[in-house]
Amino acid sequence: MGTIKSSREIETIFRGAKRVAQASVILLVARTPEGRGRSGRVAFIAGKKLGGAVVRNRSRRVLRAAIARVGGPWAAWDVVLIARPGTAIAHPETIDGELSVALKRAGVA
Image 1: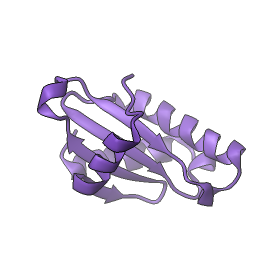
Image 2: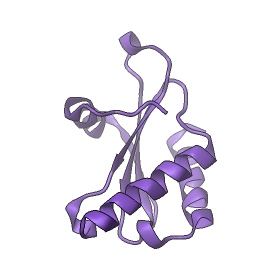
Image 3: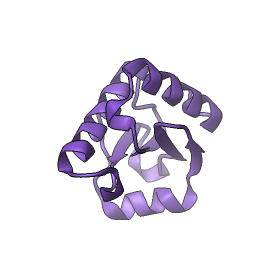
């Protein structure tokens, strides 16, 4: 799975992305830049407001697993997932459903 690691790229996505919020996750999507090819990438963000390192790491793992189950990354799309309170303890079916709805609303899937 291709991941977005550069803070500069993440800031660019934050400025120009389409945002869709759900109860467990916030989704930001943007088209992959032309010069980078058609492969899609994903970034996972869990801020310090969520809690300690254990909660933040679990939230990122939950989101990573959800992306794999839903079929990501998507060609020609850069996707950023931001964990919300409750992401770490949400049921996988709940996360998958919310992620699928958010992707449809954003025009990715």
